Image (cartoon, rainbow, N blue to C red):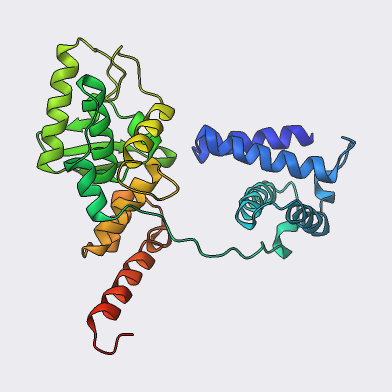
Length: 296
């Protein structure tokens, strides 16, 4: 019976909430870890008997094992969704998560690449010769000029490009589509890439491919970004997501409307976008201290 309820929950996440396979795997791991903690001998028990004391004991054990507060809160979020679903399905009367609060986490500002370093990336860095170099430069250009996620980029098809109207169509989280405008230079880079791709008879309908015509993997995209960012910045993390942070931060630093940035990023809530305003405020503080006679 218990397994049936869990499977029902994951079907709900897959078919109704349309969560990605990666997110669902995280939910399965989190809930599985909790069940293993409260029922180590795999005995039969009623799901309605789970109480908040057991959840608190689990949280305490995670923190004792040096699991980061941010990771603990993510696990609690999985449990919260699970018990909320069970309550909505009238499987349980009382939600044991109601009395649970997660550990406090320090605010972590998004890491981004400075504007002059991004300028150096496209003006000074020498990309590999041939098709691979052309494609890798396009990858970095797309990340920086559109702010799309790595999975969104690797899933782009040629038909998602509307070069006549200078836009691309992106399929984001929960299968939500959004249209992102592209600049004239990026449009020209896309046209050049597509022309070379056609000349090499790489007929794969996916936008990004290897020189043998295979769909480019997320790991290959990550490796390309890390390789070229390493030549212009010393920040510890050099990933596609850092370029997403860079896109949003640079837009806000240069006066973009936060609601427009929210839509471009595909955020469901403005709060997710507001984290980037902290970097903007820090830049204003720095400018004030440097420029005002009594700024120190």
